[in-house]
Image 1 (cartoon, one colour):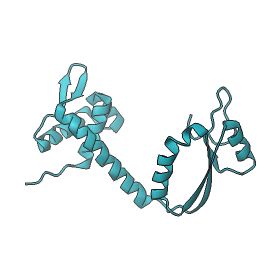
Image 2: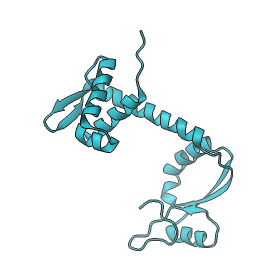
Image 3: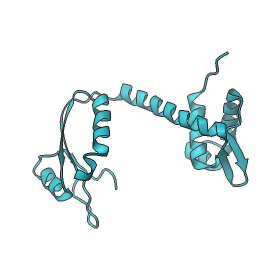
Image 4: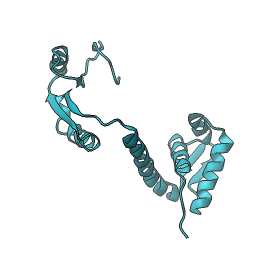
Length: 162
């Protein structure tokens, strides 16, 4: 007999595990504490294992809960990626990106590979350099987007993350 796991139960499990508290998880999910407890109980019944150790200060993962957390996180990520891919309007054309040199060998290759897999019709050009160079290139319309660091005074333009 096969066991089917409900993705919503897995999502609830991950929020509870990350918050360490059923009440905080309920607030984050916009549900009641009892609704979250029922979902966790249903997941534990489905698995036939306890996934949380309950205490006066909240919950911690059991050994089974830790194993479930690894896979639940992957499953939720795949489900979210699938929905995003199906809903996403295909991108195409060129994009010019500026990024600090220190990220050229670390983060950039993985990020470009993931982007290329999701948007194969986009031609990406990358310019590595210092923030001041990236800002000048943005000003000259040589870049579409740039990662810059300006401690103390924010850059002109649209700030995507601080």
